[in-house]
Length: 222
Length: 281
Image 1 (cartoon, chains in turn blue, cyan):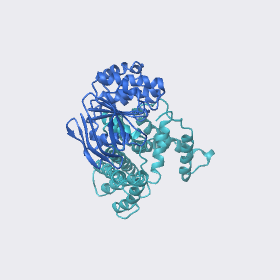
Image 2: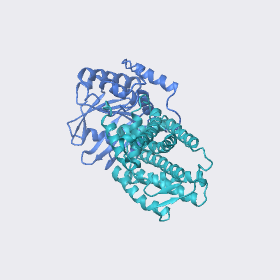
Image 3: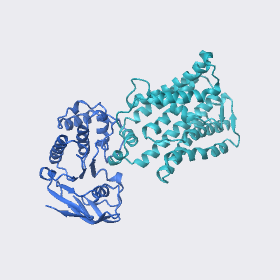
Image 4: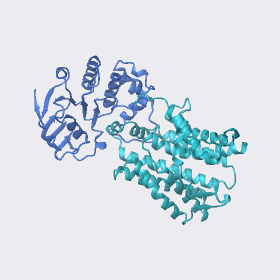
């Protein structure tokens, strides 16, 4: 699904190779400054590689601008605030996520069909969010907000889901809950995932493969 | 006195178009755009010169709107493509527009034309202005609730998120600036036709009065969603004009027209200082 060939980004990533198969859940660990986020930025198109290629679902996207890759790639960020808009309602946030990578038209966003879909997806979180579509996202707790951004990242199709230390800003109990949600949603929706983590425990519950990023290269642990 | 209130209402509605333009940049795409002092006069100048040369007032209005849009486009290019700071982009374009506007006006710092040539020739100014503002407000409220409009709003609130959702942030900023300055140019054109006058210094303080209207509008309770906020801009502008008219006419304050900027400033400071603390981002 995702293939990185001899990827070079500035001086951080050096001839990095990686192959992620369909429906695989790959975890990446590494010290601070090892280049984990740079790797994600290169895949998503925020950082321009100086060499090598990025192939997503058979399509070479190395030179495709970031906003055009959005139909292929979805993100969940470390900070729940980064992945949502606090001053907009849940419905508005979901509407924006729903049209990720699609043409944004001049038709009204709200529709019955979309509402039903949102409610169905939010119900799954078991947080009562399905009844709060008109509430501002800023009123949610950090955990609820991160759960919402996970739903938002999976509501439109994508080839790969990039999860960047998604529990780093949460307490341990909430983290556990969020990880369960990620595991269940990605399994159910058959997502291909790449996740940065600092916690080796995540491997057992989520990962099918673990890589260590060191000296600009990935070393497979198992 | 009653006649002056009507004038305040009409001027308030005209400036409501301007306030809406400022709302689009300052609040929707979160771009502090200072082009407006120039694009307001640009609209007035284009419209006045065309009317003087015998053009249909509505055609001149459309041309002024397009001219404003072009000014906004340049501000956008300066910021997005040439990477000049947002504030500075607007300042530079407004600065250059001073020369452009003088050129359009044939080197004269002010032009007057008789009211018979303008869109208000056959009377009914209040009705025409109200109808125009209503159409613009309805259109803006609609667009901001479409998928396109939501994408645009997300750019102003959280650029990282907007980009991740595939919104073309750079183009969205340019589009926002075009639409905003087109509205401001239109406001300038309507205002000049209303007065039968175009003056090179007409634009001075446009930004502050527009922003004051937006801020007053935000204080109106009950208008929370985006459609409500669009209406609030226009209402804010009307309230501002009526407030100013009353303030100047109250003998106890002993205020004169030249005190206008000072009163406006004080009012804005008070309103902004008492702004509700934002709970979230």
